[in-house]
Image 1: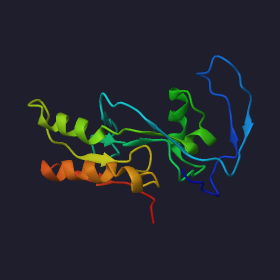
Image 2: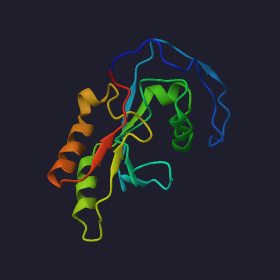
Image 3: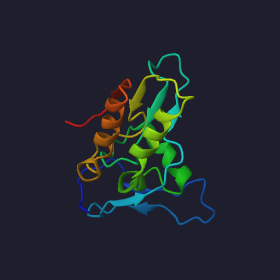
Image 4: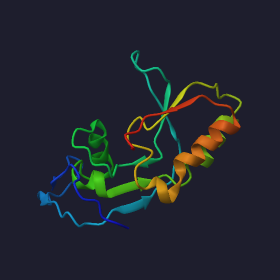
Length: 156
């Protein structure tokens, strides 16, 4: 684990999904990031928008250490019991089985190849990728099946 200075959130508000109000917590700039392994039942998320040029998105991580305060994906974290504030930046859910689940999907006779976007919700090249390499493995699966894929990232 490591720390990352300059994140976007300065507070950790209570979410509407919580039964108990724990109050708003103030950011600790030295808090360590937690990586939480989660099992993946279904990896592909259908995108139904006429202004988006792909039909599916894949997110190997939920939450994002980049911590951009303007990120539209923050509002998904409360669904999992975490805040859209500091938790979004410091509690990263890691879909360790994502490459296997994607390959199983591609092998199904019912699957029809259609463009897939990596990171429609959180950045697939956030710092966790250096250790977990899930994006790399997902791209290898796409290459193996010659499946169209694209990536959105802010990594520089």
